[in-house]
Length: 628
Ligand code: FUL
Image 1 (cartoon, rainbow, N blue to C red):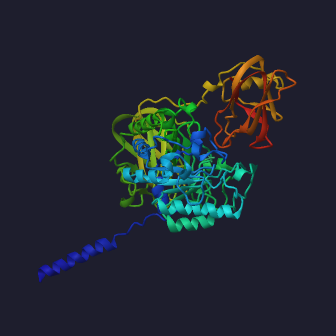
Image 2 (image 1 turned 180 degrees about the vertical axis):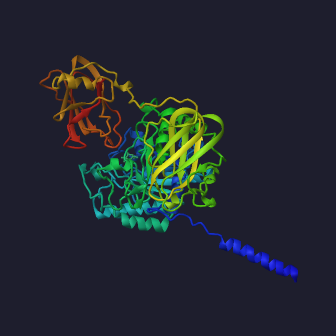
Image 3 (image 1 turned 135 degrees about the vertical axis):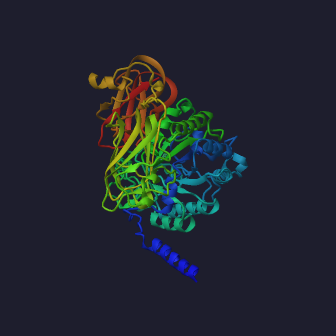
């Protein structure tokens, strides 16, 4: 009896202990918040892109839609080789260009003959979408597809009939190949195309033509876990450049309904909209080579381990994902130069961020919501636990005492994004001789988001302090880590100048102080020329076979030429022999060095005519020109 009374009393007080203890509520979400699938997508961090198709065999970036399927003949194609390379390079998935702008389909679609069925590959029995999705399953990475809305092959492009065709293509891809983690809708629409032989320019209303609401309904039904990419989402957004970096300030939000495919103020996408009401995190797409498709002349221009590492810090480390493109070559393999650098890059990042100097430490925090949301959560290696401040407290300090003086030059911070992106400003300091000093950074410390990586000048210290000075609500931080990456050289991007060696020349129609910028071999200076023609005088007759044009490399890439005609002559008054006409494909979003090759010809004068400008109101801009 006594025992059972004691038991009753004890269990009663235990019940009270649990029930009467003030429960600490998790912070309320600060809107907008991501869907669970968007969080899982961002946690992939790096994944591969593959550009492969008829362009690979026709040395093009944007096929016109007229290349013969007979040219597609990758004799050693091996999707398992691709996937093994991606796994070794730390990639968590791959997105394949199932159909690029040229309209050629890498799967045996029932909807058009312009597809792999009519190629020599496996005698017409091949299916690259199947082979790659199978390889992904085998090696445990995720699979996804890029399907170009713009189609330069189809005769009915521009009509309602084409839209139905496009939707049915998507349905085939979404039903026959298992789960996809992302669906990639390209915003590019250059207008010109083969279009069943019409060879004309067609424009469509990019906001309405493709009937995206219907597409989203189809995807919700067939592939609910897939994140939809386009310039403005809704799943994830383009980052506004094809160079592979996001802004240091990078909000995962957009103002709903504002950004559409081909949105003219696309530079904003690097930073997001601070006042946005829709969660659309950024994806940084970039090719490991200058172009998206394979060109043998770029074999020696593969991004180096250092360049790729730099991009990692400015993409994943700027609250975005990194979508790294591999232009599969004509054999049907990831080229050895590309795989070596990609694997080297992954190892380099792992080495730089190997030893977290703050792991397991118990930092002193100036505010916490209760023990469950204490500072210890920052160092436990678990993303799901987080340090949170009390309601109304949007500024707080975290101070770490290291067991010994260490060299430090990297920091990693993570917010718990299921509850929103909050941090607006913070500083990082280190302690020395009883004082606090800011670390030396070359970018602003504003937003954090899912992940922020900081590179700073090496300090030797046993004290680190992060001061959060402004946020959109109470702080919810999952992790803070610090590392010593060794002494690494800062990477400076320079355009490849090799191609720009050539004959010396003058520009008879351009003022000398302006003309000098076109051949000073400095990508940073741009020569602007009014009108639509650039006349080049080689001084005497030369045998020439190529023309090279590096567009303006400044942030705004002014005066881009999208279609050209090159003529030559031996007299100034008669430069009329046409050696090549064409387009500088994709120059708007990827303004890399453009090289035009033609049958060798003897000439003293060369004239470049800008047949079409990207922005007709701008005058032509040339960072560099070379004639060889
Ligand atoms: C762009 C396309 O025009 C390029 O060819 C490439 O596919 C790139 C990823 O997207 O918009």
